[in-house]
Amino acid sequence: MPEVLKAPLVVEFPFTRSLGPVQSAFLTGLRERVVLGVRTGDGRTLVPPVEYDPVTAEEIRDLVEVAPTGTVTTWAWNPEPRRGQPLGTPFAWVLVRLDGADTALLHVLDAPGPEAVHTGMRVRVRWAEQRTGAITDIACFEPHDGDPAQLSGHSGEFADAVTGIVAPARLDYSYSPGRAQTAYIHALSQRRTVGERCPSCRKVYVPPRGACPTCGVATSEQVEVGPRGTVTTYCIVNIKAKNLDIKVPYVYAHIALDGADLALHGRIGGIPYDQVRMGLRVEPVWTEGGRYPDHYRPTGEPDAEYDTYKELL
View 1: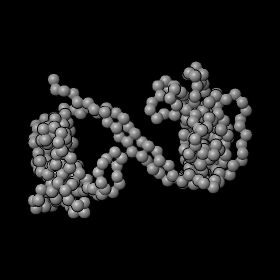
View 2: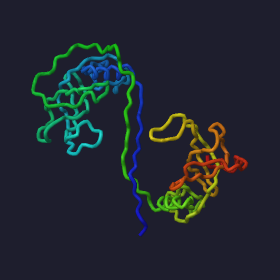
View 3: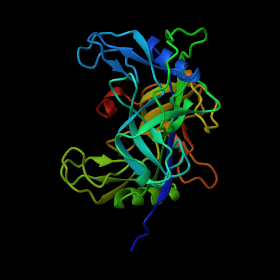
């Protein structure tokens, strides 16, 4: 029985966004231990605030302070916190309607166990010791038996407002290729590129998918393609990726390997980035011990005619 391949895979990137006046005031308020909502035209107070009324789509800017105390409207217990979650010990996810608000805020509740949590329980904000203007400035909620907190009557105006945030996004999972891609990966380790031919339309797909995306029928006939190919389209990368030791600018391109009916992507090297072009003929460059081409470089052949690759754009 063939070996079942499996490998951990992490997809991670920082998501950077600017803030409008409403979100800016909300996050700056958290930094200053003030919770702000926004009032709609019919008098509802929304927390967290939004810039447009979800019912009427009217733009709303009327900021109003609400209390850091509130009531749990619903909850779910999390017995095994994951990496990056607000608390390292078991906690409850809760929707909390803060005093003075008409909507609920999603956050976490620090409680000793699920038996200590119930809908309708009173809670209050536990502020983080170090606050930067983010939702994590609320470290969590905690049970509260006292009266609603007194408000300061803050206007929502701040001298040093937060204008942008960086939210890291990360997905950890284990990837296991199927039969077709396993054969493709094994061939790459031998410095060969193998696709599969559709028995109906006769197109050769690289990398193979196990089925023809056009005809929907299974593919099994292996076809070796390349190693040379043609640049069909490309882009110039000007932003350096984290943990990728490649000097910018550089070029990533779609490359139609000879004999393939689907272009794969690869980095172009051995040529100035501003000389890469459609139709450029390229070949793979392997590094010692590499399981896939490090990049593709020009072969020195004349450029391919447009008609020979126009269907692969």
